[in-house]
Amino acid sequence: MKIKTKQFRVEEGSKVDLDKWPTLVDPFYESKENYQEMLRGHVARLAEQQKLLYASNRHAILLIFQAMDAAGKDGAIQHVMSGVNPQGCQVFSFKHPSATELQHDFLWRTTRDLPERGRIGIFNRSYYEEVLIVRVHPEILKSEAVPNGPAGKQFWHKRYRSIRDAEKHLHANGTRIVKFFLHLSKEEQRKRFLARIDEPDKNWKFSAADIEERKYWDDYMEAYEHCLTETSSDDSPWYVVPADDKQNTRLIVSQVILETIEDLKMSYPETSPARRKELLKLRRQLAK
Image (cartoon, one colour):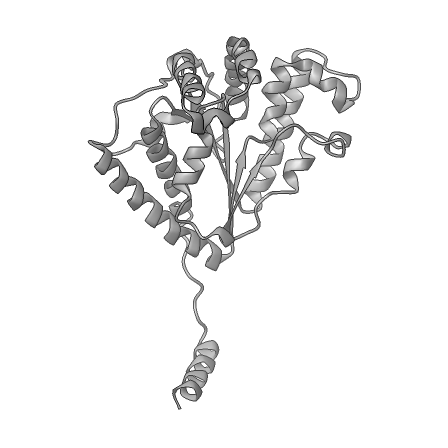
């Protein structure tokens, strides 16, 4: 079954109601073997496109992953990017900001880790935490020393505008940004938390804080709705990816990434006549 990625894309200007976005869709694969074959095909194509991206050296790709706990961000990144040359791909995970980072504006710490031209950068969580977890827990702002403090809706609108402006600037300078919200149901999260408790090799993934944050589920869904509505654009779109089926999630994510890179219509740099003449001369020397 062909994956039509447009159905998962948040169109610029549309208002997002996550109750209307599925957490589970019919599988795009027919069996486990078929899933593995499809994913291998995506990974192989992605590896070739990454080589082309590096050789052309005109664009950078920034992939942003946001989700509730246990939605499968780590697994999606690991499986989808498994065939990409590590030299051309970097993954950054953003936890609680350090004391130094808190002395700067909220975009500063992620700006330092933006991908160079020719490379793919992956943010496992990102500056969007500043309009998600911080919106759900506004007391965090006390440590950020924000001038005048939050002043209702206008405060958040200003942050959304800062993000939109930053992404618009990056796009104009060659960075293509794709943002994934892995949309997990509360019931599926419960099942995955239970598995983390019941399976010893998954115990390390679980903490009491995970249960505490579940109490704020509705608040997080509202924060995500505002975020997706305000910051999805034609140039830097959000994709709401159903996350109750991990295999489907990975196929959708990899298809979106492939389409994004292939749409750049890149080509390998052409060899000039002078350069070709030089290479032939070197080849004759090597052939002796």
